[in-house]
Image (cartoon, rainbow, N blue to C red; front, top):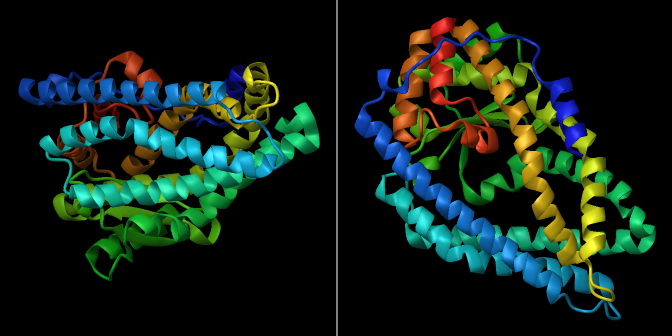
Length: 378
């Protein structure tokens, strides 16, 4: 599985080479700023580790306590899958609350505790419903195909990823945020001008009310086909200069130009058969006789997914470097990129130069100092 995942990364990663000048974080950030970022990052990592351990503990216990298949195995599988989501959410809730409180203390959180609780409830309801459907389909597939269930399972994984990528922006995202088409004005004109110069069909550009939850700024590309869109946080539009916003828009247009979302789906489709086979083999070894296999499959998936994420992050970092290069070429404004990277790192309380092991395990983007170095080399 890991060999195929690495091969898929090599196949799909950008072939363009990107020059990066060496940069010292202290040239752009004070000792106090670096210390604040490190303290926040380290604390959040410990809490993330605790949350992961608790959720794995729930799955291990579920494997040992899995109910018997009974006369209604499909219904049992659906109920167990939904129950796992609920149990994992409840067990990890104190750690999630502690992580949120630390984010609130550094000024990242604007949402009330009541609003946060409502979001957790909505997210759990959606996840539980989807998990119940997945658990039922899993049992149906295993009863129909036996130990070969992983093959149709891989097709289902790729198919559902495509469906959710297409429908997510119009069905799921609006449950949590309000998306407004960017109104006529200088920003929209800049977006359309950049898209025209880039030769891309941008789809629609939306402003999302991120400020109701956070002070952090961001932007992203989502959807595929008719649901393709560029989304800008309202905090980005409010707190950053027009030149910096243009740079971010140009970066997102780079993702559209190089079809990065479809390529991400292609990577998943290439890896899915080997990943589902690995999950099936692991699950077969820990499923108790006569018991529903859903907890064993869930635990196996929880062990396989992080390893695949580390591999896929390599592709993500390479894609982000190419999008940065595209933005620099389109705007010809490296000073704006340097200013933006410094400001957004401070606003998001990010670590501009995390340790190498953290970049390898968790980094979906190049570090801030790498991105500044890329701007300086352009």
